Length: 331
Image (cartoon, rainbow, N blue to C red):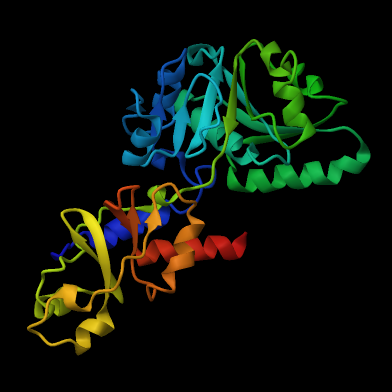
């Protein structure tokens, strides 16, 4: 275990990633893309970094690169990251953007994508919703107000219509439509199916989005500077371990957990392996909430993240755990 002067910055970055992709600045998204018409171009517009090309191992690539968004040619059951699917999109022709939102689970991501593309394309964008009767108007107003607060640069529009077609008919010939996947609200189901999709009637192209819950790999940072060897003398471990607990690893494999209080009472001529406990960790693909389940056992120390072979792929630092806890309290 070695000192790492950049560690506070690493931990702060991990805390910044604790909001979902639809709740924070899009320039911090990490994006992967697979083969398909318009996928690469769209992926390049969704990040300031270089998007990662998926070759063969979809899950492995997303985990290795901590991808939060996958731009792909069709929706699938893959749920480790949020999916974004372009449908007949030519970004060079787009002169405006409309994010069609509802109370469905994917509307915040639709608004986030619209906000990002409005910036990169230099075109106006709005969030728009439909209500069918006066009784639905208060909910529509609240919906627009909520998303508008998160994305103040987006225009806001509410239309009364009997179906999603009423909104589609108001779009310009070069307006890009963005909406959530066909699940949840009646509005999203009408836009994308079943049967002939209403969204396919747009002449400016459309993007369908499906948000996914954050996984443990999204919060994980490099474990360097956090781990100790089981062969390390206790006297040295006392100097290096700065947190209540530390992962114990040999050749990259998690083999135990050592507590600071155990080190404090151990003789200096002992080694870490003499006082370590059995390993406790979360899997890379587990929902991020799993971190909170083990943090108390680890005395709020860093939570190890392992793959299916118990190889240590990262740790979730204490500052990120605090952010996760705050998210859970606000949910």
